[in-house]
Length: 285
Image 1 (cartoon, one colour):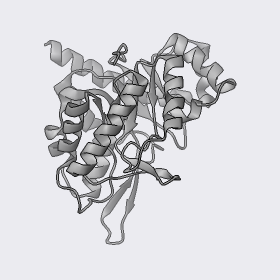
Image 2 (cartoon, one colour):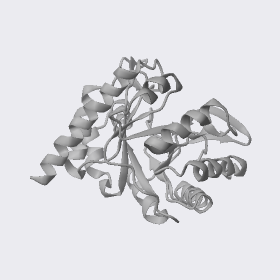
Image 3 (tube, helix red, strand yellow):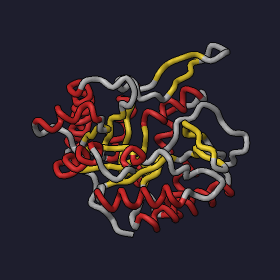
């Protein structure tokens, strides 16, 4: 597998077409942009014209949401071929996907669904990662999911599952700190304990995003990963803890729903930049 140039250890944002005019008007204090692969699998048109402009000026991360890499069945070869064509066309510094499944027997679900952490599913997901990396000719990153329940079939912790997948396949890990916080609250666990056990040396990128607060039928807190609001203060604190241990890492602000004006999104990225600079100063001291 080829090793693409790494993303810069700076803050980036998910690209939204409504921001294109503001972004193109002047150089932006952004380390990189991320796109969702499935939005750019057509042949051309305005989406690709905008993306080519971005790619000429900034580093690029491509994030998949439709491979269904955790599914029990085989990967969709046509989808994988479209993904390869997109990566070949734009040569992104990073490609990532989710530890989740979203299709079964030709039925596609508009969600990223959990899988049990067992020896059987470990082997299945490792085979899928190997297939993706062989087709793309590059190492990928795998993202930890947000969860809302624990599956009784699981026989190993999520952290151990991700660590072993990375060891077997050589893939890197994408640590979504917001997902860690969501899963911990929903499952009455401690986010810091999860992060202390996480193989941080395998992390190549971090995601931060907003979430929605509800309560379940028993009155317990329930967090929904909706990417529709600023990053929560508790997530910022966890993020500072992580980069305090790892040093600066590429960090993406995810804001996909109720998308704000460009200055608001850019300000979130600048907050992450300040945390990264503090981590850099601390590591140099």
